[in-house]
View 1 (cartoon, helix red, strand yellow):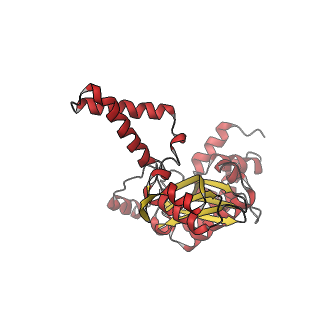
View 2 (spheres, helix red, strand yellow; view 1 turned 120 degrees about the vertical axis):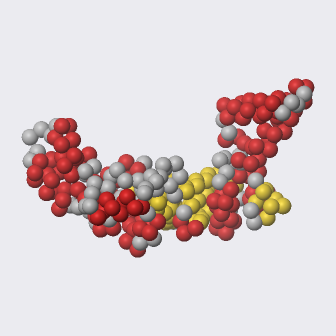
View 3 (tube, helix red, strand yellow; view 1 turned 90 degrees about the vertical axis):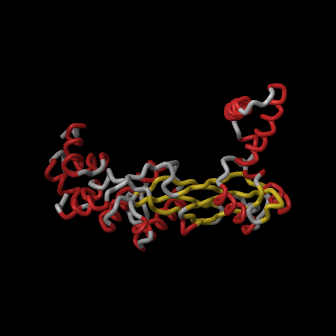
Length: 294
């Protein structure tokens, strides 16, 4: 039987399961929608799907390393309480180990990949959702590789609330690399150095600073020089190599690395929930909703 989009939509409305899970269920049951509902319930996917519209903005970041490969990932849950749950933490580690082993290109590929237990990652997460009772999602990850002559800077702040993975080339001193990662966690720089800043951003910032100076009533003949000074200051604030090092503000991060014989070539900083619009719930209404069985 042909599996039509309308049939998938109908099953999704009945169960709240994900679109791909609904399609798979219909394929498995030859288009029998009632059997597909049972299939999803048996797999725990219907219960998981009903949580799909919830906002998962809590969770944790995690870093795992294997030889010359490292992964930084963010896994989200709905509440901080569940994020500290042992089952959730085990799931995060399992996902990290799997990502290191398979090294998928992106989240979509990761969710479709097969774990060592024979289950797809998406199904494995759905099983955890059915057990834990909250929406859980693999939001993002980055995989870095290095040589034997380099070092990973791995740092988790506030129990994983912020995670940083940096790559420092030219030194195998992991403490140096970790100190740089800690600095990145604290100050959240946008770039490694000036040459990463696009010409468009430079021109935009120059225009803003020029307008600011003119609005302050500064003479036009000194505005240009003043703007360049402020522009350089701004770049020093957003480029990690120019920032005063958090462990020794008398030197910049660039100077610290040069002294250690290292060069920062990449950095990734994840903060749990950043960019996710969190839902503001009325606690009393939520309790009443549960009492009424909604």
